[in-house]
Amino acid sequence: MVNDLIINFTPTGMIPTKDMTPHVPVSVSEIVEDVHAANEIGITMVHLHARDAITGVPTYEKEVYAEIIGGIRKYAPELVICVSLSGRDYGELEKRSDPLLLEGDLKPDMGSLTLSSLNFNKTASINAPEMVVNLARMMKERGIVPELEAFDIGMINYAKYLERKKLLEAPYYYNLLFGNIACSQANLLHSGVMINDLPEYSHWSLAGIGNEQLKMNSLAIAVGGGVRVGIEDNIWYDTARTKLATNSDLLKRVHLIANANERKVMSPKDFRVKMNLQAGNGLYGRAV
Image (cartoon, rainbow, N blue to C red; front, side):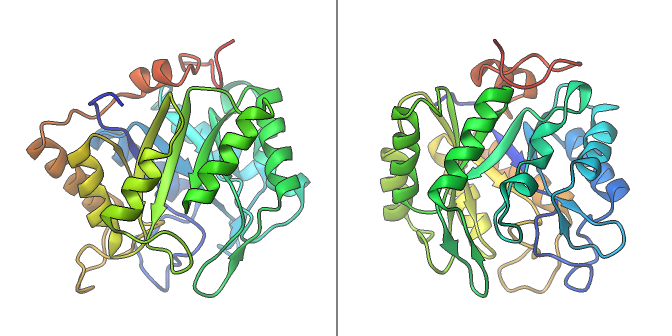
């Protein structure tokens, strides 16, 4: 793992609403502006979720993703963009894969691939083997790099299975997520075991759910990994939950911790090289 810090910015997610926090960006213009501000602070990549313009609920529709991606690339043509292919609300391959159909200047560089089903506090994310295989195959065919989401060590093992099936190829990027009630917990043992089990040529970031975000981001920065950070995983600035965070608040704190650890933020340009992505500025997805 190189020493430069990957910052994977997650501004919106599927759960936070305006009733929960006024700071969550929901509309296309809000998401574009939050990513613009994040890009000015310094990020490596962005993990996007789209919301319906009328209801504010999550949507899979590529037309909404196109508006967001187009808005971001007007000012950040090198920023690495990942679209969510989440299974929390939609079970059909045609819906979950819809953002992968975007092309040209609107083509995403990456798509999220949760490697197995899991339970959250009140809902489930269903990722049947056939779905995971089909999404991986479609991304490979379209030259889009999977952002591998692992909530426990078994998911890493499943990624190795996909590698043996020639559906994944190095280099890899893993988001390792900790603190969900039914998955790996935010402690040194769980994180160490998962990091140790990653395949060769893996880049990785640590994420923490809710109050665990600051802990896991701090750990990742200290030990040489990357971070996943944003309102998607945590709406609060402090663990006592007295102050709602803005995305800029969370990013600026990560920068402070990174500076204290003498970690420079990895630029999108450098990440593109590490992940064998095209150079941006009109060329997106995996390099041939």
